[in-house]
Length: 424
Image (spheres, rainbow, N blue to C red):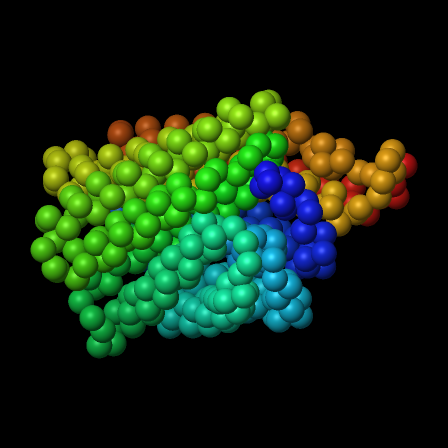
């Protein structure tokens, strides 16, 4: 059975109230704009000191926690019950988690930007508590899983990585407060591996086995291949973690990179096969962003190799951060989100025949065209800013990104408005 058929066959009976996933996705849209504005505020130091306390670090976490994390919470709560054939989590608890998580991200980012370590620590605690409660809901759902073992395995791996991310985040917050904590270089290395590649990466790879075949109208990739890719990626994470704590770091870094590259290559081969075999070939700008994200994932691994080899490339760590977060995760997520939102809204509206509202009828294509151009311009300008170490170019990139975020927000607001209009 195709992933599209499996999704449509069981999704309607497991839909959360529309207000739950839409509030998570709506907050992600707002944090997307705030991230670009925070980057504009810190453009003067972004290229040379992106990891120090200040607005560049706040911008990074507004993307990772505010955009990526917020979307992960909403998408996981809605898509995982479909994959596991289990009831959706309680919507009242998810609504409470949204309030806690949204406030936590806002306070944490403000504490980083000002900077004000006690404010940062308070926000970090709220974010950690929200993630822990969400993880408990996901574990309860996974324990009764009855389908899609490849997706389920990826989510289990993502949750295991999340535990490392949360522990390392609290340790880093303690360091900024001046408290006793494990060595910062170890916790930072664990955080940099397990947050993007572990938690978000494994979740993105796993849910892709639902989303890509669903939108392309193709058969799902073979479960054995999915599990093989998951096993390779999990091995890479474990080896990278051992290297980070000082166990044969050089050798394990190379082996981890090799295993991670094999996992990514296999995953992308399965994704391209699904796209080539699908009945829907024209997937538009949204999947152009998805493909750009995939290219960024591969490129990030090449930059990891450069970091391991300690190549004398100026601002190599900043190049890596832009490629990993901006090109891969953000491009991939925004491409998927502009497909998920109209599809989910149309499923909630229901209807039949000519009364049904289609995803295309709920989409504001001109706003997405502006977002597409601005997003690519922003990434290109930030790359140029790194190469030139020029704050003005970084500011121009941040402003281009902000205009694109406004356009994406207009697309989202239009979707909400059209959902409320009577069906014709």
